[in-house]
Length: 88
Image (cartoon, rainbow, N blue to C red; front, side, top):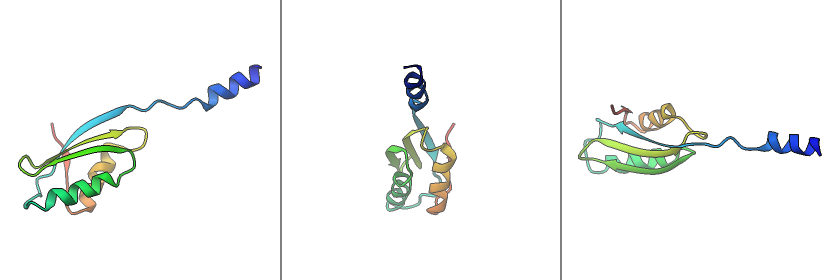
């Protein structure tokens, strides 16, 4: 029985936290840009929701921090041609 308990303890997953970050994406200059930014962000593993505002030049991303990091989100927008940064 102690071995079984030890195995159960090892197999217990680390609980991830859902986080939300607002990225400033100043390079969006037309109505199609938010579509490209949203598409790039939704392809990142762990991203749950993405809201992109052309008017505010920002993207609000909710993600699982056990699967991705903010830096990965920034890299995704940059790779799509829209460098971003965390909005203060």
